[in-house]
Each structure stands twice: as C-alpha cells, then as structure tokens.
Amino acid sequence: MSYAPFLIALLLHAGPAGLTHREVLERAKEEFQEGIRLRQDREQARPHFRNAAGYFDQLRTRGVRNVALYRNLGNAYLLADDLPRALLSYHRGLRLAPNDRALRESLVEARDRVVYPTSGDLGRPGSNDRPPWLPYMPSSWLMFAAIPCYILGCVGLTRWRMVRRGRLLVAGSIALLLTAVLAGWLLVRAEEQSERQGHPLVVIARDGVLLRRGNGEAFPTRYDTPVNRGVEGRLRFARGGWVQIELSGGEIGWVPGDSVLIDRSPSESKNH
Amino acid sequence: MPVPRPLLLLLMLLVFAASVRGEADDGTETDDIPVVGRPVDLPFSEASGWFEVHARAEPTTLQAETALTFTVTVRAVRPPRRPPQRLDLRQLRDFAEQFYIEDPGEEIRRPDDRTWEFAYRLKPRRTDVTAIPSLPFVYFNPYLLTANKGFQVLYTDPIPLHVLPHETVQVPVQAPESAFVLATGAQVLQRQKPWTPPRLGMCLALLLVPPLGCAAWYLLWRRLYPDAARLASLRRSRAARHALRALYAARRLDTETRAARIVAIVVGYLQQRLDLTIAEPTPREVALLFAQHGCSSALTEQAVRFFEACDRARFVPAEGGTGVSPVALQDSALQLILAVEVETCPTLHS
Image (cartoon, rainbow over all chains, first blue to last red; front, side):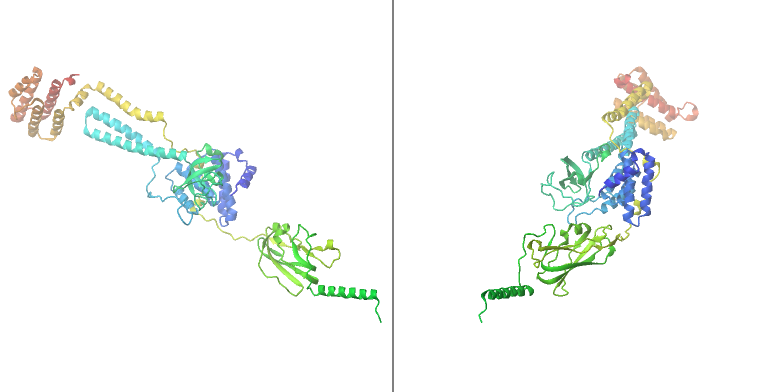
C-alpha cells in the first residue's frame, strides 16, 4: 500500500512541522471521528483512518510515546487496513505497558487477520500458554520490590547481630532470598530486552513474500510457501538491502528490506 | 469461307479472357495475397475481395468496468476471394488503452453468404472513455488494377459512449468496537520511556549502600550501647543463651514456682558452664565450686548471696518481711550469669 500521495497531501495541506503537538492531535481526532462517521462504507472511511494514523505517527516521530498514542495509532492503522503497521504499534505500546488489556486484545484481533498458510505453521506465532488472568509484572515493579527487600534483609541481619533474636535472622534471610529471586527475574528481563534490541521485531509488510537462502533474487527459496503481510519475526542480519529474519516458529530466511517493517529503537526509527 | 487469321486470333483471346473472368466470379480462383505492401502498423484481416465495414455497440450508456458488445460487420460488395478473419483488438492501442477486451469465444455469425459479423466484449476502463474509436479494417482488393494500391484500409465510425461511475456496494469497516474508541486527553501527549536496566554504577550503589549503612549502624550501636553489646555477645554462649531465654520465660510463673524455677535455671547453667554436679547445691557448695574454678572473690560472694536469696525466697514466708521478691531474684540470676560469662570468657572483658 503506497502512502506517498497521502504523505504529500499531508505535507501540503497541514505542514505538520509547523503545528503544535496539540494541533496535530486535534487533526488526528477529527480524521478519526470522520472515519467513524463513514464507517458503513469502508472505501470512504479508510482514507480518513489512514490520515488519522499519519497524524498520530507524526506525533510519534516527534518523540511523543505513550500507551494511549500507540493504541490510537494501532487502531487507526487497523481500521485503515494496514495490518503490519497496526501490529507494530500494538507491540510498541505493550512494551511500555505489558499489562494493558486493550492493547493485548487488539494485538490478538490483528493477528487473527493475518493470512497464514493453510498447510503447515510457517510464520504462525506459537500458542501463548500464559493464563490471561495472570498479570505481567513490569520490570520497574520488580526493581522497586527488590530494593526494599534487600534493605530489609540487610537491616534484619544487622539487628539480629545486635540482639541475637532468631526471628530477625529468619526474617532477614527470607527478605534476602526474595531479593535474590527478584534480582534473578530482573536479570532474565534485562537479557530479554537486550535480545529484543539486538534482534528487533520484524513484520512482513506485503503479501506473497518468499524466504530465500541468500540476500538476492538469484538464491533459491528456503520454503515454497510465501508468507503474507502481518507475519512476525525477528531481525537477524541486514545486508545489501536484504534482511535475514527468523519467524516465530524458528524458520530463517532472507527477504527484501522493503518487504518488512522493522521495529528499530526510537532513535533509529525516527525516520522510519 | 476461310476466316481471316488475325480475326481467329482475336476470337481465341476473347474466349480465354472470358473463361478467366468466369473462374473469378464463382470464387473458386485462389489468388495469392502479396506480402509486399501490407500496412505494418495495423492488423491484417486476411480478407481478399471488395468489402464494406460497419460497427455498432450495445449498450452505449453503461457503467465503467461493465461490458458492452461491439459488433463489426464486414460485407463483401463483390464476390470475395478470401474471407475476413477475426481481428485482435488488443493489437490496437486506442482500444487496449481504453477498454478491457474480452474474447467471448463466439462463432463468427454469417447472416448471409457475403456478410461476416464479429462480436467483441469491451469494458471501459474509466469514466473518461467517451467513444469506441474507429476500427481500421485492412483487406486486399484484387479488383483494383493497380497492384501497389491493392491493400485497402476501411475505418468504421467512432461510436459515442456515455460511461457512468461504477456503482459500488457499501461494505462497512469490520473491526471490534474497541478499535473505534479513541483515547483522548493529555495522556496522549505524554512521553513515556520503557524500563531500562540501571547502569553499572547504579547497580553497585544499590548493592553496596545497604550493607555499608548497616555496618555503620552496627558500629555506632556498639559504641552507644556497650552493655547491650555485651549482652548480645553473651548470647553467643549456648548455655548462657538458654539460661537467659528460660529466665525470660519464667516471668509468667507464680511467685513460689518462679523461685524454684530460677534456681533450677541457674543450677543448670552452672552444671554446663562450671561442671557443677550437685542438683540442689547449698551456698557453701557453690562457694567451693567457684573457688575451684579460680573465680574472683567478688563473683564467689555474688553467687553465695544469690543462692542464699533463693533459699529465703523458697522457704521463708513472705509475711515475715525477710522474703525476696521474684523480680529481684530474677534480676540477681541475670547479673550472676553475666558475671560468670565475663570472668570465664576473656574476650568479653573488652
């Protein structure tokens, strides 16, 4: 889907660089509301949702990043039938707020729209065995829990050293044990985050993309089945305009760089 | 009468010409169509003869991307030598650019022996298509005597069209209701950052500050409360720790029972610490025990006084005024244990 006409119109019409954040937000809201008004006719509604997504994205490139913005952005892209960008926005929002139920539901809804191959599980995300009622403990919470536990453990053991009361020894030991558990959990999270930064999320941006064995059309395909837009994976390497990706099921292959959206870090993705 | 020779030759020539003419009229003659002189930029119909061409379209008012039937009628004015073939309109740029051309695969209609009808299905690509352009029909006319003008091109008249915008069926946007909800307010303009692990310096600070603070607290506490520190050290002695804990627990007992219990606790302590073997020692026996262990006279005196107080508390009635209160007895026991620990453990002197 080409956004060039839309972007040109946006630049000519609004010149968003000259608008304040609030004005850009207002325009996004107006376009979104207009899309809702015309929702009975998707051919008419989609351009408005696309425009709204463009304005929201303009805010994002200016450095505004929060859960509400990513939810709006994802919804606008979803309603504009731009599934890959919707998925990317939901993922970005969930990175800020892993417990946001609306974002999780929207992500599930968007994934349901991805057309996976009828035979095999190529590109299909693995089943999530985590119970939906189990809250995802944010890393900052783990950190804020570990620090008092550590302090309490140190204080408890010191006080036990002073008065030799057994209860203090038990309490201090439990607090330090809890600290160790939380610290281990945090280390795992930090490792996951490092992995995400090293291998950012990749979403296939168009239908019928074939995974190849090398970075060029001359290389044979790794799988005969193409993957469609919305299929998620992780970036492994980039070379000569091609990227090597690893799909959710572990399948690896090269695809053209312009056939994927890459969730780079904020500083890298300003111009993306 | 003999026929003159020149006249005979003329008659033979006429008969030959007539026979040739007759073969051409009944269509059985098959003249080859020359290759030279064919128009190179137009499709050739393969027809040979003398033709006229007409075209019609039905309907002429229609929506974009809907089909109309375009019929080309070729009629032979004179007996044809070769019939016309179906033209491929996709080779004509004007047609290909303005219409989707479908081949209905129909047979060529023959209303009569000299007429051919070719039907095409055309779909206007856009609403700005205003007419079906002229169709060039190229054929070879053998009746013309000038061979270099044998290939003729007939153009049909353009057929005006009125193309309407395509009627679309409204399809609603399919999405869950939650997708139509827009988050508003100042929260949309906030700048949040995802959690990042603290840097190495911060990690070291978080790791070292609490134990260092606690160490400082401990040293300060020892300096401010030396007795409490000494008591804490005493608790390291297993016997003293048990005795002190038992004394603490004995507070709940009644007066008479408590005195006996305190004596039992101190005796038990001395059994472990100074190897006392007597279950109910007298003050004299206690003094002997302390002397055997080289304890100071002050400590020995303190122990003797404690056991004498115990005897009074256990055997002298309280109404007499000479009784010892359980609280005082308990305090004396505590002091005695502390004094014994200090004298028997040299490190505690500090």
